[in-house]
Length: 185
Image (cartoon, rainbow, N blue to C red; front, side, top):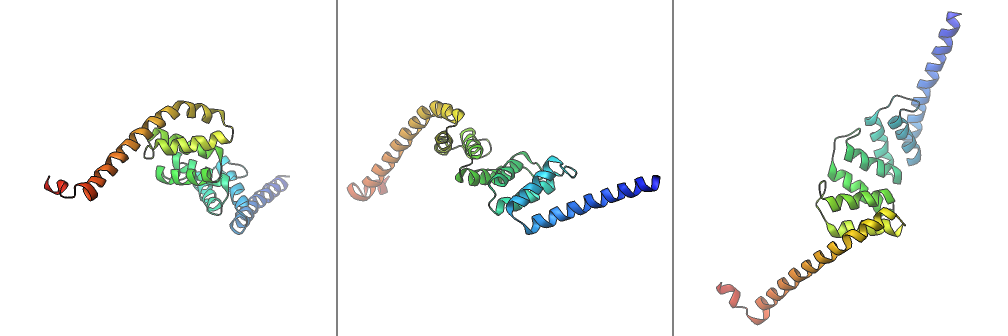
C-alpha cells in the first residue's frame, strides 16, 4: 500500500516538474502573452512557489515584446522593488510607455508622479497632459484632479510666458536695438 502511495506521489511530482519545464520552455519560445501568464504564475504563486525575481524576469521579457499589461507590471515592480531593485527612473519609463499606448492606470500613475515630483522631476504640464488623457477615457478621478490643477497650470503658464517674453525682448535689444549697450555692462 505504501509503495502505491509513494508511486502516486512520485508521478504527481514528476508531472508537476515537467509542467514547470514545459511552461517555461513554451514561454521562452512563445508569445508575449505566454510569457506574461508564466510571470503571473510566479508572481501569484500559482502552480509553483511565489518568486518575484522570476516573475519580474518574465514580465520584462513580455514587456519588451510589447505586452501592455506586462509593461505596467514592470513599471510597478521597479516602483515597489518587487523582484528587482527600486528604480524610479526605470519605473517612470515603463509607466510612460504603457501610458502612451493608452493604459488608463499607467496614465494616472505617471500623471501623479509628475504632479508630486517625488520620484521624477515635478512637471505640472506633463501631469496635466496625462490626467487629461485619462479624463478622455472617462476616468472620474482624473476629471476631478484636472478641475483642481487647471487654475494652477494656467497661472504657471502665464508666469512662464512672461519670463519667455522678457528673455525674447532682452535678446531683441541685444541684437537689433542696442548691440553695444549690453557689452558695456
